[in-house]
Image (cartoon, rainbow, N blue to C red; front, top):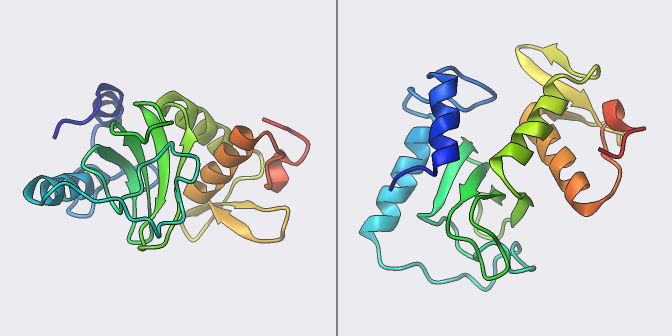
Length: 176
């Protein structure tokens, strides 16, 4: 499986550097992760939708655990943020999805494009509220919790998508 053009361009610009977990050359990199998921998908029968999955209620993202058409930009054992080249009936090619990596986790289209994701990422990392603690970038939430940068970007993306205030202190007066 070939990465979508905008993802390949992003990875080439990063040049193997670790940017918010998007390691490209290490064994646990996002690139290696998506290659492994694609290989699993290619060697298996076509995926059947999981009716019990919580995500995709709007039809934008297919109800599958992992899809060979998802190209991970960020991935951990718990979650992935991926470009979707195989969207659901109401989705669009190139949308960026958030997937919780458990059977009953959410799968939702948060950004319309990689550019939208990068805009939110830039807003988070350039925020006056960003602090670095023990090597991790953190932002304070209006609920008193602290959010790691990838989760803060998710919160910004979801709030912008839903037209509601961003639940982060640094964005409290900004509707983004």
